Structures are given as C-alpha cells and as structure tokens.
Image 1 (cartoon, rainbow, N blue to C red):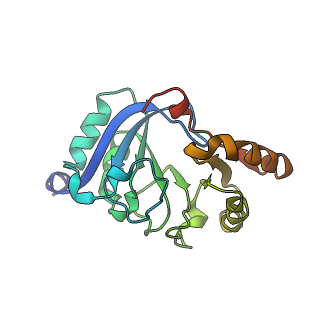
Image 2 (cartoon, rainbow, N blue to C red):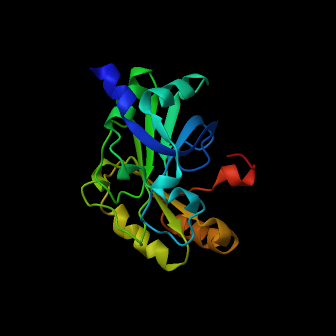
Length: 206
C-alpha cells in the first residue's frame, strides 16, 4: 500500500539541485534544494517569480525525488518555493526521513503546516501574513528588509516566535547597498538579531 502511495503522490517541482545553503542559520552547509511550484503570496521583489504558477512545472513522485537526492552526498534537504506549504508535504518528508535525511523548510507561513521537519524557517511577508499557529514552531525567523519600516515590522513577529527561535534580518538583494548599513546599526542596538546575507548570490552559485 505504501509503495503505491509513494508512486501516486506527485508534487510540482520548478527545480532541484545540490548546492550550499546561502542564507540564515545553516548558511555555508551543503544541502539539496527542492523548489516547489506554486505561490500566491505575491512579493513584488521575488527573485523566483517563475515558481508562482503551479501548472508550469513538471510533477515528480516523492519516491523519485528521494532517488535524486540520494545520487548526492547530501544530508540536508531544503524544501522551498514558491510557497511549499501550498502542498501537503507529509509523504515527501516521510520519504526523505526514511532515507536518513534531515528535512528543512523555507516558508512564508501563510498556509497550514504539513510534513515532519528538522528545521523550520519562517520568512513572513507583508503581502500575505503567516498563520499565527505556525510561528511557535519556527526554529528560525528570517525577515527580508526592503525598507527601514520593515525593522519595526520584524519585531512584531519576533514577539510571536519561541524564545529559542533564531532571529535574522536579511537585506532585499536589489536594495542591499542601502539596507545593509541600516540593518548592521539595528543589530548593534538589538543584539538578539543576526545578519543574514544571500551568500549564494555573492559567490554566484544556485
């Protein structure tokens, strides 16, 4: 029965690749990324808008995704998007865990939590707010800073996560020259926060 289910659970995949995590707490660690198609959060500065339309992307059986990951030495699999929680991820994470892999997710938190996760990164967006019930589960809160007012907005969500949650401020890529100095000054005054940079863009890797 489980074998049949693995072959019938399919998810839209924009791309999948083995690389180095470029952001947040696990920055610099090797990880296999699975970018799922579909998103209605609508960030104007999104750098993967091609992921938004679910129907544009081929469907992969969860078993075949596991097989692709196992072709590499990856120990961590990051599920991202798009907005990955638009899909039920229970079977995908069971499949990955059965292979001894660690499961991480990057989500806006705008949809109900599904799947079994070793690390949950919530990156809230103004365009579609995260569900309150997801925030206490976050291991990492990563706020993209597009303008100065986003610093105050970040504190709203920092108050809703658990005390052990890691807090990151990340400059929006196209405004990094302007926002990074403001973020650095803010972190110096509020040392509970840390700086996240999009390392993969600086060193030109996926």
